[in-house]
Image 1: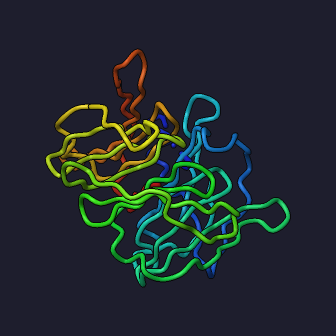
Image 2 (image 1 turned 135 degrees about the vertical axis):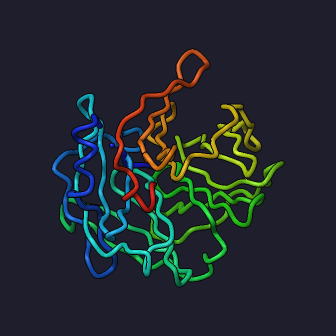
Length: 253
C-alpha cells in the first residue's frame, strides 16, 4: 500500500532530490529493497513532476528517485500498494497500474477510464485499494488475478464527509473529514469500524500511510511545511516532527 521519508538537514535536501516517471519516463530501480506492504516508506510527487520514494530502513528517512513526468498536467493522484506496485489516476480520468520486476524495472499498465470522480486513494496491499468518490462514498477495489483488471469488492459510506484517505495495511486506512477530524478505519469482517484519532487536523496538506501503525503528514503552520510522523502505541498516537521544506511535495501516497 505505501512507500515512505528525515532529520532537518536531510529534509531540507528535498528541493534538490527527485521523484518518479509517467508512461513516458518509467521509474528506475531502487537501490534498496524493503519488505512488501509493511515497508517503512512512502511516495512523494514533487511540484517539478519527479516521483521520490522515502524509506526509513535505518532510523532516518532516505530518498530514492524513481522517475520524472508526474507533473500537475499528467498525474492527479497516486497511492503505493506495496514496494513493487503503485496506482496513478491521471488528469484525463484514466487509472494506471505500475508494477516493478527485477527483469523489466517499472512498467505502467493503462487500466481504463472513468476514474475522474475519485478524490483520494488509499493503497491497502498488492492489487487492492480504496477509492473515495465524492465526499462520503468509497469503494474497495481488487485485482484477484493480478492482471490490472480491477473489480469492486465492497461499497461503503462514511457517516461524515471526508477530505482525504490513505492506506495503512490490508485491513485499515486513515481518513480526515471536512471538519478536520482524523480517524482510523479498521475492517471488522463486514465493513469498516471508525477509531478516533482526534480533531484539529486542518493544517494537514498531504498524508501517506507507512504501515499499520504509522502515517506521515505534511503540516503547514505559518508556511513552515513540516513532515510529521505519527505512530500508534498502547492505544495512543504520538508525533515526531521533521523539516521544514516540504512545500515542494504536491502529492503523497
